Structure formats: C-alpha cells, structure tokens
Length: 158
Length: 404
Image 1 (cartoon, each protein chain N blue to C red):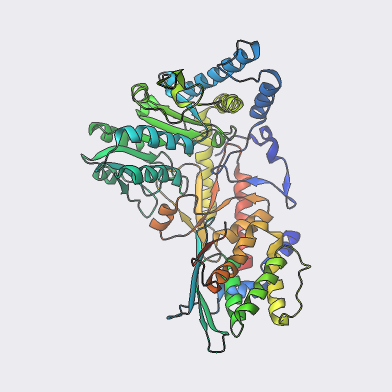
Image 2: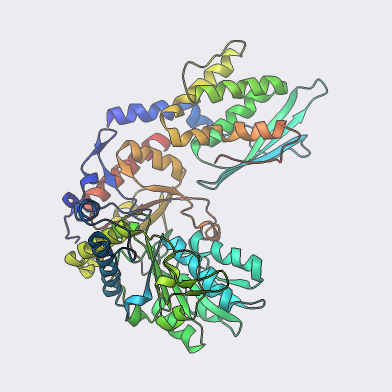
C-alpha cells in the first residue's frame, strides 16, 4: 500500500489537488477575444477556454468552464493563471515545454519563468500514466486552437 | 452466496499489476479467455487450419467441418430453430450494421419510425442514424427512469402505426439494467413490429433462448463471452433473413457471378462475404462449450449473488453513489464518488491492480439522461469472487483518502 500511495501522491500532489478542488479562473469571459472548445472523446470531458488580449498584445485575462477529472481541471486552472500577461509567443513556448515535459523530464526550460516551470513540472508526473497525458494537455491543446485565428475552434485529444 | 472459483482457468488473471494481484472487473468491456479457448484455437491453427468452402483437400474439409460445427454450437447455445439462422460477423457492432444496412434498406422509408431506448450502446444508435441520413425515417427514443430502468409502458407508448422495428438492448452495458424484453416483444408482435435485441451485455450472464423470447434478431460478440475478438453473431429468423438483400459483396456469398448478373447464396452464406473469422469461430465454440460445462444457470446465480454483495459493500462506502439501481440487473456496478472524477478513480484503482472502466461507456445519451458525463464501472465475469469486491472496496477507501 505504501509504495502505491507514494506513486499516486507523485501524480496527485497537493498543488494539483488544490487546483482541482478550487479551480482558479473558473468562469465565463463575455465578450472574449478568443474562445475555443476542447473535448476528450474518450471520457466525454469538455472545457471552454476564454481569452482577452490587451492593447499591448499580451493576454489580459484567461478563464475556463467545463467538466473533467482532477488532472484536466488542475491543468486548466494552472494554465489560465500562467497565461495572464504573456504574449501569444510566450504562451506557445510554455506549451512546447510542457508537451516535451510530458514525454521526458529532460525538456529544455531555458528562458522560461521559474515559477511556471515548477508548476508544469508538478503536473508532469502524469508522464508515468500514459493514458492520463491527454487529460493534462487538453487545456493546452485548446489554447493552441484559441490562439490560431485560422483554426476551427474545436479540438479533441484523439 | 457466490459459489464458483474459476480464476485458475484463466492464465491472464495470474499476474501482478503495479505489485498487486490483478483484480479484473472490466469484463463488460471484454472478458478474459479460459485456457480451453486458447488451446482450442492454437490446436486448430496447428492441426486443421485452411480456408473453408473452397478446397477439395483434407485440411480445407476439416476446417469447414469445424466452422460448420461452430455454427451448430451457437445455434444450440441460444436455441435457434435452424443453423442457417446463425450468421457469423466480425463483431456485435458489425451484426447491428448488417441489420440496419440490409434489413433497414429493404424495409424502411421516409415517415417510418425505429424505436430505441435512451440507454442504447452507440453501436445500436449510430448504424440507424447513418441509414436515416440516406432514407429519412425517424428514431423514437424511449426514456429511462432515474434508476436506469426502462418501463414497458413507455415502450408501448413509443410504438405506433409508423413503427417498423424495435431495436433495444437486452441488458444495458452502462447501467446493468435488464430490460423487460419478453413483454416488449409480446407487445411489439401484437402490433406486427419485429424486435432486435442487442444481447452483447446479456449473453455471458444468463441463459438466452431466442425461440422462447421470440426475438426476430439477436446479436452478440464473441469476446464478451470469453471467446476471441473478431467474431460476432447475428441470429435472425429464417423467413426474415431469406428476404434480406446482401450486406457486403464478395466471395462465398454468391451462387454464380457474371458481369451481366450475379445471383446470391441463401442465408447464412449470403451474409458471409469473403474469408470469415474461421479460427475465431472455433474459439467461440470452445468458449460456449466452456460456459455450458459450468452451466449458464450456475453462472447467472453466482454473478447475481456477487452483484448483490458488491451493491451492498460498495454502496455502503461514504461518498459513493450507485448509478443504475433498476430492480433487475446483471453484471454491472456503475458508480460515481462525490470527491473524485471517474478517471481519477480508475487511475488510483489501477495502481492497486484493479481494472475497471471509467467514462461514458459508449452510451452518452444514457449518461446525459442521468445528468452525468461519466461513471466508474465495475463489471463482473464468472471468475470474479468476493475477494475482488473486497479489493475494490479498499481501493475506493484509498480514493477517499487522497481526494477526501
């Protein structure tokens, strides 16, 4: 039991449990400058992401709505916190880092904010649970779609 | 009390997952295979394998005999009147697509209605929708109760002069509800409406007699009945099958072919184009022999007792809500927890070596009717016993510890 408990605590760290039970930025932004829907057809989970962009071109506000497991909700909660004040390019760099981190702990984190890196590393325990990676990345894939003006704003994880 | 102890017949169950003995509670998704099935298939490939209905050589004749014998085994198992009423398909999904495409095309027109229930598996919804796009008939959906039950009266109200077929689950894969199929069939027939039963989730849990039920079609898969994947069964009454056009074209389903005109075989060959799942049919027959040697009545009694035990034990855990509490159920315990999403429950149980399914169970309309996105589902097989349920209960306590 104790090995099993340690294993699981590595995935369900306190910060992740806290974000999943008390998600930040869990509301609608209306009107939003960018909006996209992400869903996980495997489990029916769904989230809607809202962004506003300031005159300086930086993300002014980010929020989300939806239902999901602890991992996907915590990921969306942490992501929307991190996005505020970032440019689209900075946001994409964070996603590229997190995507790499979900495959290998040797992902390159130069030029990224230390706090952001620490938070993403906590979530990257999901690496050891391959079927759950799509839960952790759902919010980020939805972000990718929200930031791409040409894309149809509907993404799945399959 | 549950009485059977059969784990040692199933080689795959004898292993550890993440350091814990495997507790397999996902037979509703696919059942494990007894050694008897694995050996029958290996022996067939090693000794008797060839294509069927083609060769004059000895191996082909032996393979043909085994394939035909498998059809007879299935006939006997569900007590069909004739072995030409048993069609081998690639899956229960394929069987449902066959009926929709062949029978549906020949019998449905604009303005007609097909009656389904809200708890159908997607495989008994989508083939009808695909056909609806071509033809333009309507689907009439019978609602489910909050406890997951389907009421005979609601089915009666859904049937009218436009109804051409009732196509419903025998047992719900998401909730375990046993539908009142005998009464539904009697009523539908009194209105001249044929009935298809999707028996995928029933066939391994209870004796099925298609003549006693008077079902017009009955479908199930091999892999949920302790047999191999890649094979499904479609039972259809002889006179109905005879009137149905081919589903797929190819070898083995024709009487003669020329570029001007091709004539088709009688059922079942008409619906078995191409090389069929030969070894899978042999494996399915071995699986049927296996469950029959135990006795379907005994299996049903064992699983009923175990489901009662599980319902009490898991239902008593604080924060657990059972989903699907119809008075008549088989093999399925669906639940949610107030503290954790089904996916998180599934991950934590997996680390305890416990395999369950988490999600919508390919029954999204049923989930929506119950205002849910997903449930955790423990589903029983003949090899499960009380120790598996006890392990599940202790795993769920750990979920509460982490999320509580």
